[in-house]
Length: 135
Length: 160
Image (cartoon, rainbow over all chains, first blue to last red; front, side):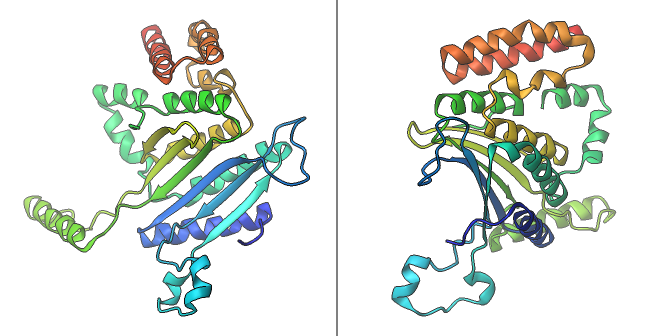
């Protein structure tokens, strides 16, 4: 597995990944976050653990790296042969700044979602407005 | 597990789950477009063509597929899975910021969900907030948390 990237690299790669997916209007981007507990040498008893952030395109067509060494043959095209995996570690101190940027990147990248103005038209009616506040 | 109806309910229950199992619970966010299997694509095209002919071909442009954003909080030990799905672009920023608060170990009250209510509702919001904290503290079931969230909503509406 590739080593964790810096925040800057992670964000630039994530921006690419999101824009690529949106432009194709096909595929997925998976983002996950979990506390990084079992790091040898790191003492997380006194304070909160660091957070591990991962992003992937979930490409299951890519060959399994564990099996690859056995087979030794790659028959798939180059675009299908690689699975994009990004990861970065956020220390508790950086969390707020990181997530502010994370939200920006996601907001800018996830343009395939419904835009606000479409919904605003619906919300003009009374029933729509009530529903809008609920949702 | 079913999808929760509101992002507030999702965030509240996620906060409770993270409080209960801070070390093993993970949050996954999926941004995806609907699958375009050959059969599926044909069906979409057909229905589009029908629509266009009905509306005298005013809307010729093929509607771009709308992506969805799915948030999932999962604890592998207990198998508890909390999900929320949306397709609204304006929710992204708020949701990700809330995920950051969850990552920082915020409790139900610390999420600042009450801030979303108008200023006039401050007194109303304050009242149910301690109840929510008690719920989280006593570790009652997720259903309880959801009920609390709904009650809060209703209170806000009545005031307006």
